[in-house]
Amino acid sequence: MSQLLIPEDVAIRAASWVDRYDDSKLPFGDRPDREWMSEGRALFATIRECLAVNDVTLLDWEGIWAEPPSS
Image 1: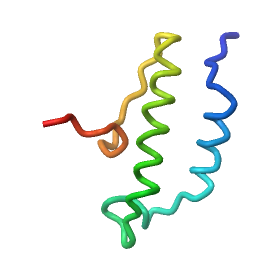
Image 2: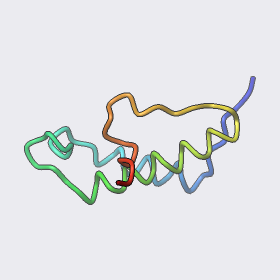
Image 3: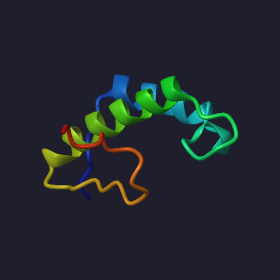
Image 4: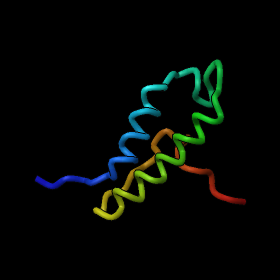
């Protein structure tokens, strides 16, 4: 069986971030949290890069985790 390796520090950061999850923190929630969203976007980018090494593409199907394209 293959494993998709994500560095331990990234996994710990992601687990800590998910522990603080609350729907209200999302951009369309009752109490949007820009700092929490920014951390989530940074983690998304880091995990996407880690998985790409193994030819795995991480998609932002919700449209809120990938950084918007620069104008």
